[in-house]
Amino acid sequence: MAGTFKQIRRRIWLILNILVVLWLLLGVLSMRVPPYEFWPAGFVAFSLPGALVLNFLFFIYWLLKRSWYVFLPLAVIGLGWNHYGRLVSITWDKELPEGAKTLEVLSFNVHIFNAYERIVEGVPRVSEEMVDWVATHPADVFCLQEFYSRVNSTEYNNFNRIGKRYNRHVFASTYQGDRVKADLGIAIFSKYPIVRGNTIRFPNTPERSANRAAWVDINVKGDTVRVYAVHLQSMSIKAEDIENTYSAIGDEESFRKESRNLARRLRMGFRARAMQVQQLLDHVKTSPYPVIVTGDFNDIPFSYTYSQLVGELNNSFEKAGNGVGATYNGPLPFLRIDNQFFSEGLEAYDFKTHYEMPLSDHFPISATYVIKPKEE
Image (cartoon, rainbow, N blue to C red):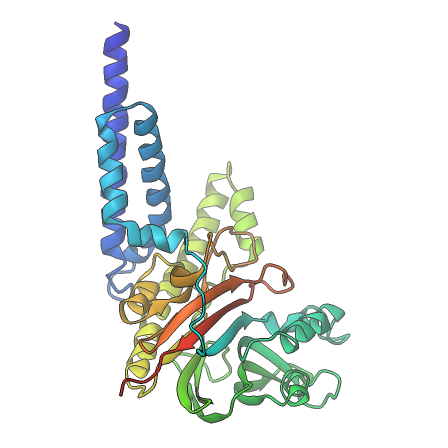
């Protein structure tokens, strides 16, 4: 009798493992479907990390049981290793080639330097600390999303505090907003000369919107590199939205209302970002120079947006980072929504997520690139 129950239990676990594999395959396929054509694909792809983790747990389970069923999750891990690499990166330290020409790029959604938290009383002290951290960082290029600078303020003119004070070149794609006349948007600061730059405006996006992209061509000791700073459509999910959903558990009507609210916002974001990333990539493909695409993409590595980007470019975290690399400093843990991508002609040698700077709702990320010598 005990042997019969044991056999039934093994079959149940095997069926569950097969269902997880099917879930995983469906998730991988969903990442290739534009959410503006079939929005449910966005939700299936969004759930893919759960399938990857469960498949790995089944691998451990069958391994401990010394069952030949272990080859099922093992085969999935082998075939889908690049997707596990999106979840967790393990790379070895690389030594820079002697005489290599390098470029370090910092990307940071600075959350308006927290100015909105006390807009009537003025910019709070935490903003000063964040500005000073950015200004003194050793990176060669800063790509700042949700940048904020007071127009008529010497003390809070962040163009001066980050750029002019340190002899950095600057290109800004901003709009003027709020009651104290501030510039808001994207700012790119560079140690090296900025040859040219422009803005990419996304369709169906208001003029006064932080969701945009900017690009600059930078002359790095005789070589030109095009750098993009990107801020795609936000998820528009606040901490209280998640808290309200959790607190509504047990109240069927309230939970249904809060869940629908979250789903609606996610659906709108999936569709908008899918269209925006296509416009961005169309522009990237026209670049005559090697490119680095940085910013707040507001999408996880298991999304149509991310898949389109890694289809054309390399991801710096995957090539030179370690760990989970979470960049969202909010109520949803382990989210990596800030990224840096790079093209041929460059190689990533180091990638860091700066957890020592927790004052924004995003953590800064930086990567060091080697500019490969041009072929004769």
